[in-house]
Length: 248
Image (tube, rainbow, N blue to C red):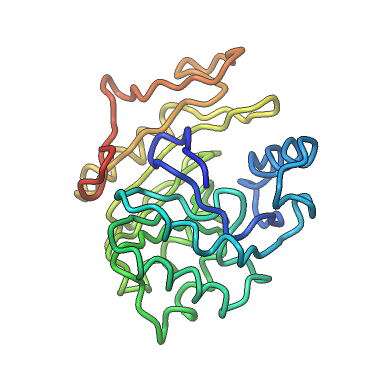
């Protein structure tokens, strides 16, 4: 486990590493880039590179931490990837149940698997369940799949990288929306109007809104040499959380 630089979490926990691309949001996957660096460094757990790998030896890591912590689960993978077995997901969720002092944020692009998996299972109360929403064709339909999981205490959207205007959104049953632009050498720009459209709808529907970053391009549409970290959108900073957490 490692302390995270991601603005909306505290630590990362990766019982699974590696993934495969499923939609345009995956094109410049930061986890794949990071994996190559870790392979070059000889980091433990990355002997298979970015090939999907389950790590049962990492399952007990959160049990060792007593202080309440917010974990982003599988920042280097997707817990609901088709190659991750139901049995292994059950083991991950069991650890979550056994550590009620922690909060776990699970984000997936395999939203279609969620309703079937949780049809006869309850989402642990300390698990926040989220889907990625990068565009209209692939991202927006994931929202409806997430809304079907009624047992989730917190359902959230990671609208990052925001690649186009996603239009009108049905945010019923959604508790938190994160928006961010893409960073990196090949980043695609995010227009301020696209981000503000999501923000306006979240505010109107009473959903907590978090603006993470502009990415490689600033609000003026000009590419910067470094990532634009500022969370200023429409004249203010947006760093709302669905419920109070340790770092909020």
